[in-house]
Length: 309
Image 1 (cartoon, rainbow, N blue to C red):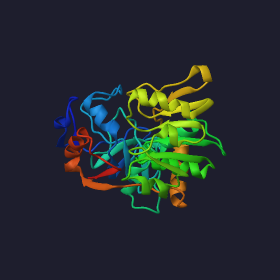
Image 2: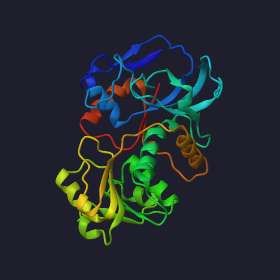
Image 3: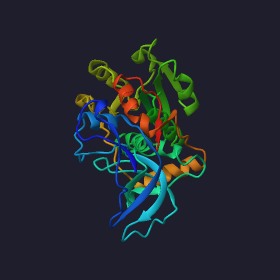
């Protein structure tokens, strides 16, 4: 089968298009004929050796995947050959940048039928990140207020949709190119961070500050004053410290996205009912994945890109 693989960590040049044996599922595993995998920034971080995830080398990236089960291993009872599924795969194991991939049976859930199967690869880890940031780490409740910094990205737009569905008021920052998308996602107030001082624009404190952007640490620290006493600062930027304010009881939480089969199933149901929109910005063939990593290294990848084998 065709796959993209790297045998050592390094720059995008370590990625190679290779021919591998088709994997055979073991006990508790299913094999997925891949419709698409999704590119995530963490794929580049693992390839470059920046993230402390104990991947096995050689490694196939692409831990978000959609496709059709075409073989099952022993002791698998909750999945059948022919099922169309999505999965957030264990990040340390081979991913879906290939024609076939193995997945733990407990990691797969039925794919949404209301969108193309390939596009469904754009859902798992980013939507789970938004959910975890808002409700697990942020502990948001109906009637509360959240400030989302960097809401124009994929996670930000999922976060807006999920927060509004939960009855939460959303203040969001965005750049001019993403303001309309952030408005369409449902934000109550949008602050153009390129022209407006955020501290002056937030008219009353929020319960949770959710940061999704690689902002300067000093600026991030200043933003903590937008959070009420006893509130929470949540960040997905694990490469920098999340600030807090102990004197006011404002605590910090950094998101490390975790698999959660039941929540992923619920997210699929939200897609099916139209309450959640899956974003896919670009679709590229498998052979162009090394070039996409090179593009990401230059900081130019916007939106959600899926990879078609």
